[in-house]
Length: 334
Ligand code: BTN
Image (tube, rainbow, N blue to C red; front, side):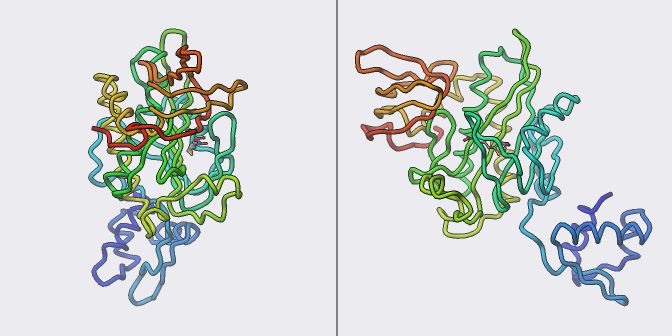
């Protein structure tokens, strides 16, 4: 029993009040232990009224992800079997990599409200204020090492599908894994891996989503190209239920990936906004321009250069130069 159990009892009390004695009895702990948990909740931003003759009453709930609510009714095979929640950490990916090295269960999820050292692709910083979603999933797939990039595409499919189905917002994917709405970035994924030449030890799939943040917290150059789910729907998003839907989608797509990874590529193609357009790819030292004409079985982008050669690209930043034809609008995961 912990402070989440106290929270549940307070939130489900009919009169609003629960006496200290009842809380202590339900949890099998002393009233002093209950009081310590109440103080811990207050430090997290909960406001709890204490009236001697009546007991405790929850008056204000902060906008935090409530793990006990995420877990309740979450029927996944792998993802979310363990959930670790923090208020502030450096990076969920870094913590997840550490936990994975210490034999954390396959599917363990690390979530935080704020990151002080959030990591983006290509060595960039991921600005991580309160109000958004920052999570990492530890996965131990028994697949060859060269299949690892497909895990990132799988995560992008799950995120875009959740935004589309749960929030009815038409999200698409820009190669490799930027989730866009109205041409602006709403989420990104960063995968880290520990592997031997012929075996994946573990993969950490990190997902950052702009949910309820105030976009003014972003530097102007980032702000121009970014949006939030709240801005797109016109209302604040319940992050707890969004996380629950996202974990269910990740689990579903992960099981499909393990059975037949071509399904992930097919779904990614159905959601992509890159293929069929002229693009530039930069960010890794070289810059190339051409027609984005496909992804190969390992998730590399195939760019047809002006001289007709087809160049596979494993990493980089894509800029869409001109929208050409049906690949420009995402259709859904199919
Ligand atoms: C990108 O550059 O588009 C990828 C951004 C990935 C950010 C997420 S937030 C949760 C996880 N922890 C990190 O430090 N990074 C990823």
